[in-house]
Amino acid sequence: NIVLVEAAHLIPWSDSHDDNPRNGMALCRNHHYAMDRHLIAPTPDLNWKVSKQLDNRRDGEAELVDLDQREILLPNLEQYYPREDALLWRQERLIS
Image (cartoon, rainbow, N blue to C red; front, side, top):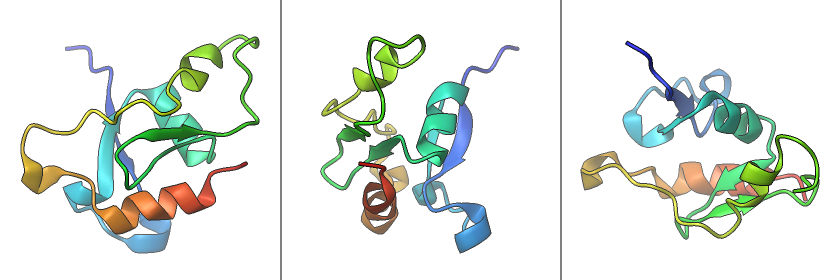
């Protein structure tokens, strides 16, 4: 089987030791990498925010820039929705 998504911690394991599904999202590797480098962030308003450091004219960045203000794709079950505090953690660390 080919798997195109992986589990990404919102508050990193190294800081939280929290493997609860609500402290995570399923992301492709590129989005996971960008989020861990604080270039994109899911926010408590359930939208994506994108760092101004990204430029849609550079290879590989246009797809990330296009995320800005787009809705987060939530799990089917509300019990697995990302926690607000974890989303806020990400938003606060977004590189401006």
